[in-house]
Image 1 (cartoon, rainbow, N blue to C red):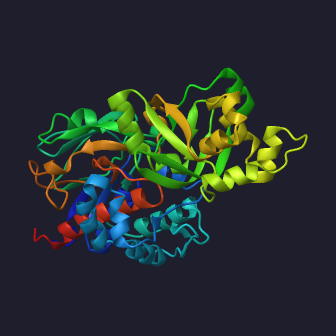
Image 2 (cartoon, helix red, strand yellow):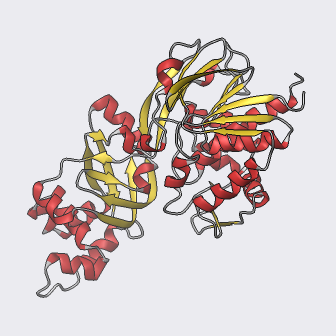
Length: 404
């Protein structure tokens, strides 16, 4: 390797920043470009509610979250594992801990604090240049990049470039997917963007929307076509969202694409059998309303009761047997996903069959793709971010091991 060789990286999200950090450590010079006014915009937004870095579960279970790409991600995550990600955070001065759910979080620093430490480390290298407000509008097989900057167009020629431009959700953070328009002209395959980790639309009654607006359903489980997830769901005026829904979003979304609707089942009391629920319902009700009786005997919230009323009728509600069955298998019909820009992530992007095992474009040597630009999908819980880091690590090692 020729120390001081310059690598161009386009996209200053986690994957691009990580590539920059590690390549600088190895003696490369780095020019990092981003269209936003500051790096890591989506990283900051995602970390607002608590930055979930990765997950602590065993590798065999971990990689299953990448579905049809699980075998390839087993290689990637084996090379740069959740523990190695935690070690890297420690190197950056960020201590981590494992939460009760198995998810890994930073102990004290929020996303903004981590990003600040990250950027300070990058800027300490003489070979690092950061170019903000540079929107990539074209790229060709001669490895000529065209950027739109305030007031002018700028062209940059490079020998090696890493693209880390993200997917197509949360465009306000820069993840707008516009790169796919000129990537479609290149000799590689692209899959269309689809929402992932997204909410789903339901046709609620006007009464229901006014009554509920937004309300959580906690300690429930969601089932869809043989898959079951324990967690929380948020009822919204448009339908359903939340962790348990996101975990099944790919299956639900695909069913809607194929059949124009999907039938989701919610178990409001997953720790009780149907017979145990019947037994509790048979306790003396007295003058209590059914809603109050359900709250006393089962701990069901008023929002859960309103949802029961929305999808059933008085005949079902007045039968303990039918009501117990409904509580365990509450059917919710969805007819569509929320808009792609609202999704936490997207599937689609550059297909793996266009890339080598080191994520280099087969038809354009010296061009690499990492992070959410790749056509993979994974649920929330640290899997997306881990996928970004692990894919970046593969490219970093490939460049390091090459003799230029």
